[in-house]
Image (spheres, rainbow, N blue to C red):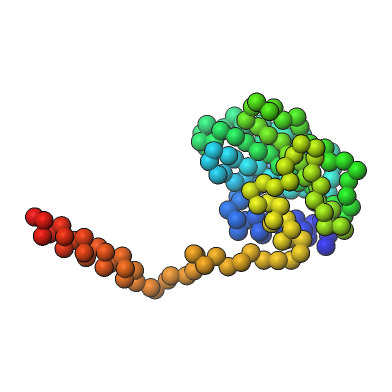
Length: 177
């Protein structure tokens, strides 16, 4: 599987798991940005289908601009995961930027090698984050997300139990008066 194909398959899984694709201007570099908010944490994921230093500053700048907006989105922590995908493992995975351990912006760097199907993590970075590692593994092996049984189609079905509860409440209320 090519890094580009893996990035495309990962995108599909991320969108199914409530990550939102951040639309970027036409002249933006070649990487995909996703955002997911699970209060009090906002997670930014930058996926680049090759390792390149030229886009690291752009991702860091986006994270820093979003950091200033944390109070508006009711978050206290911002995690920026920079994921590169390449055919081979890297000698070293470098963090995107220094993480201020006392602050609210945390940088994490991962690299996924498609030839060996291994995830490399920068020193001091976690190897699990919001299930992204599972989605990456699923995309690499061609797995699909299991169908969500809670979201089955209810079109045309009547909420009989809800109507029954409503009728009982209405009867109780009317006899109380």
